[in-house]
Structure formats: C-alpha cells, structure tokens
Length: 271
Image (tube, rainbow, N blue to C red; front, side):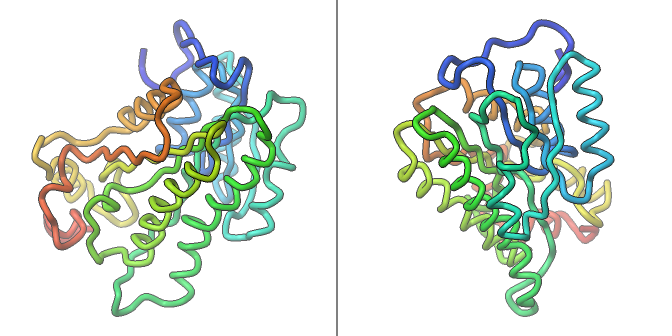
C-alpha cells in the first residue's frame, strides 16, 4: 500500500494512546507534513492539520482524507505569533478525540550566513522553528494531564554535522535538537519526545532539480532519503513505547562526510 493513502486495511494503533485519538501536525498540508497527515489518517487518527498561508492545500487535504474514509480538520495559526501558539489547542475543532500526538513539523528555511544574518531573519526563524515547538509542547502537555502522549520534532540532518550555511535556520534546528532532550526529561513518564532529522528530501526554495538530484545521493550509501522514510520513522516512534529523548538521523551516512558547507553547495551552485 502506498504510504499516506487510505486504501486497504488500516494499521492497529498502539494501545499506549488509546483508541480513538487525535494528532496535531503543524505545517500538515503539504510536503512532508502532508505525507505525515495522510499516513496518520490511514491508521485511524483524527488529524488536526495546521496551516498558516496554505489554506487551500489544507482544505483540499481535509476533503481528500474525508472522502477516503478518514477524519481530519483544519486549524490556522501564524506560529510566529506567540499568543497564537498558546491558544492553538483551544481552537481545534471540538468534539474530536483527545490529542495524543503532536508533530512539530512547520518550519521556515531562509538562507543567511554568520556575516550577513539580520535580526529580522534570525527572529522569524527562531520564532517559528524553535519557540513555537516549545510553546505548543507546553500546551500539549497541559492538555494531556496524566494521559500518555508523544511529541515528534522535525529537525534536519545537519544537527548531526553542522555547517555554517543557512545560519539562523541551523541555529534554530540545533536548538530544537537540544529542546527535544530537555522536553523528554521534563515530561516523562507519560509523554515521550523524539526527533526525526532527515537530510535533503525534497526540492527546496530556488534549488534546481539538477542540483537536488546530485545532492540527494551525495552520501556514502548513494541512496536518497524519501518522504516515505520519514513516515516510516514516525510510525516506528509511535509504535515503540520505550524510546524517548532520541533524534533519529535519516541521512544515508552523509554526516560522516564532514562537509564544510551545505550539501547543495558541495555538489555545485543551483541552490
């Protein structure tokens, strides 16, 4: 069965969270977030699909999931707004099962360097990529109470092998990697917190297809990381109740190359 479709038999949900349950996926309408939302719906979760500007895509995905027999709803919020983060759970569609899974997937990805980063660019990426997951996890834990829950933070493989390209973005993801362990310590025993850190998975921003195709397999295994691999890792983290405080790096060993620059620049200009 193709990952993220609702065709075929649904997978049983782990009893850790109870049945039924809801998931909140930030940035859950497109790209990796869309695939995670589809896969969760296929496994019987009600999915609260968060978006900010991608309202049309979110509405289309909610309709797609519903027409395939799943359950989903839309919640809109600007994650750069701290108050919007604090009140997001209050604005989820009522009457749905309790939220037992939070996936902090939404992210800003802007290029800057140590020499030219601006406070504006720094703030917007830190706010969305780091502060928002912290606030949302705080609210998630409060609404869980004594119930079991799981937080999955979407990171970047460069947290395992930092380089100075995409400077503010990198700082935000390195911070989120550290926050993942802090949250896991603070929220045990009933809430687990883990991270998934994929390397280049989809064409990003102004990157050319040619550059992406080279960067995608620039690793010891010569195998590109696929969206399906991120979905499979999410499913693994949901199913295994004894893993917390871990960041799983999906990079086909790329971190071992010790690259001084982002992979897009290592394989040539075009990013």
